Image (cartoon, rainbow, N blue to C red; front, side, top):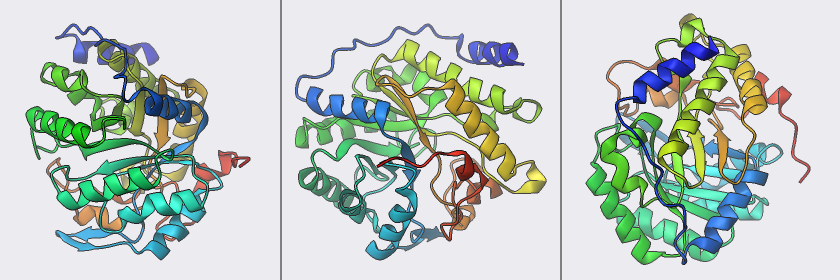
Length: 321
C-alpha cells in the first residue's frame, strides 16, 4: 500500500517539473527565521482556534481573554508552540497570554489579510513580543476557498513586508495549491511555507491505514521540498474523531498521530503542528470552500470543546517545561 500511495502522489503532480527556489533568506529576516527554525526543531506546535470563538451563519461570537487563558492553560502541559488563524475576535489576546504562560513560539495567522484591524493587531503583537512571534501567515486557504488570487497574496506579502521587514512571512494553502504552476511567484517570496496536508480527503483513504496515512504526509512534504527549499511547517493534518458513521473514531486519530510521530521527526527544515487543539461543533455552520455538508469539521480536536483530552493525548508525553 505504501508504494501505491507514493505512485498516486507522483502521478498527481507529474504534469509539472519543479525546481526549488533559491534558499538564501532575506538578510533582514535571517535572525527571526533562525528563531522559527529553532522552534520547529525543538518546540511542539498545536494549531489553535479559541473555544470561545464561534461563527454561525456569518454571526461572530468573539472569544474572551479569560476563555483563551483557560484554553492555553489546558494545552500548555503538552505544547509550547501555537499556530493561529486570526488576529481579531479575541485572537488579539493570544500572544499576550501565551507569553504569560511560557509558550516559546507563536505563528500569527490573519484570516483576512486586507482587514486593517487584523493587521494592526498582528503588528502590535510583533512589537510587544518580538522573540515569541516567529512568523505571520497571510490568510488560510484563500486560493483553495476562492477568496482571492495568487496576485492578491503577492500584494499582501509586499504590503506586510514593508511594515515588518524582519518578520518571516508566509501564506497557508493545501499542498496541491502550492504545487500548482501558478503558485511559483508566491512560493519564491515566502520566508517559510505553512501547508495543509489531509490524507482523509484522498480517494484511497478508507482502504489505507495509519502508517500509510502518515507516509502520505511525509511524501507530500518531500514533493513540496522539491519545489520550495525554505522551512516547511505543516499547519493542518490528522484525523477527526467523528462522526463514527463516516468511519472516524478516537482510536484512528490516535493511531495516525503515533504513526506520524514515528515517521516525521521535526527539524529546522520540516516540522508539523498538531491539528487541531479543540473540537469546534459550530464549524458545521461556518464557511467551507468545498460545497456540501462536512460534519467531520466538528471533530478535529485533540481535546473536546470543554477542554477534556481525547484518547490521542494519552500517548503524548507531557513537556518537561
